[in-house]
Amino acid sequence: MYSLVGKNQESQMSSYQAYPLAAMLLFCSLVSAGTVAQESEEFDAEAKYQATCFACHGTGQAHAPVVGDIIEWEIRLEKGFDTLVQSTINGLNGMMPARGLCSDCTDGDLEAIVQFMIDESQ
Image 1 (cartoon, one colour):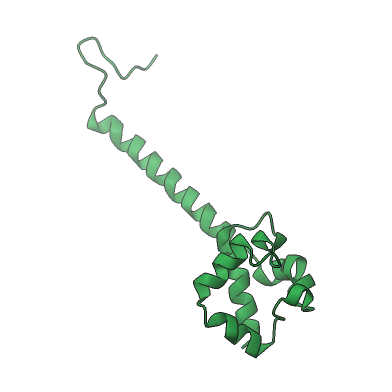
Image 2 (image 1 turned 180 degrees about the horizontal axis):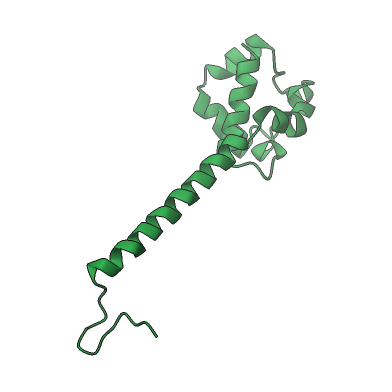
């Protein structure tokens, strides 16, 4: 049986034992970071817009600015992009529901959807 602690040693790893462990931890961290990046790259803002936002932003229901209406989106952009994103996250005036009814969207996903709607409205 292999033991890190010998007869006359305290429970300290030698530098030769620590390097493989450090390398493995670094590898695992990089793999995890790559997985998170891959997940965010796979998010399709247009598809999610069609599935959750189009009901209002494609028709003007509840006084939502219709995607493609340049003037309405310019008015909202005067408040700033971050304000638009926060309104999407928190809801607005009892008309815009919090998270735009996209319960599985992250804040980053919602930001991407807002950017998609703006891009489509210029």
